[in-house]
Figure 1 (spheres, helix red, strand yellow):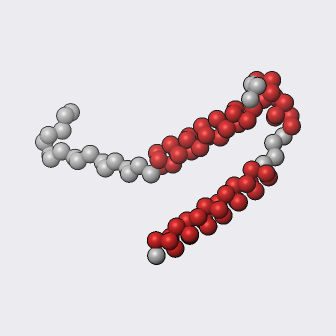
Figure 2 (tube, one colour):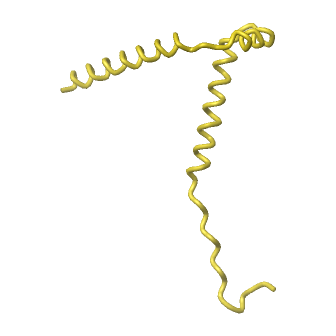
Figure 3 (cartoon, one colour):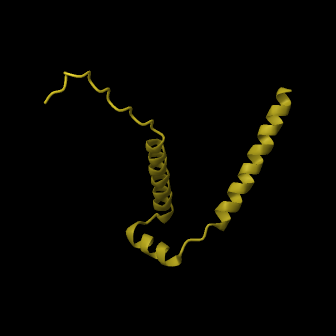
Length: 84
């Protein structure tokens, strides 16, 4: 049985790599955008990589903010304890 799991993991990893390679080949970037990046940096690939990583981090932070539970309303004090 452990060999079956190892084979399944290897086959799923190979499938993931195949999908990754297809995505990598199919990414088209506007030549004008690449020209602008070339004016700013000598390594546009690194700039694009960093921008995508930052975008994904911001998205994860926004999703985490949405998943926070709502705070309960404060308890109303008994009658006669109001601070008027």
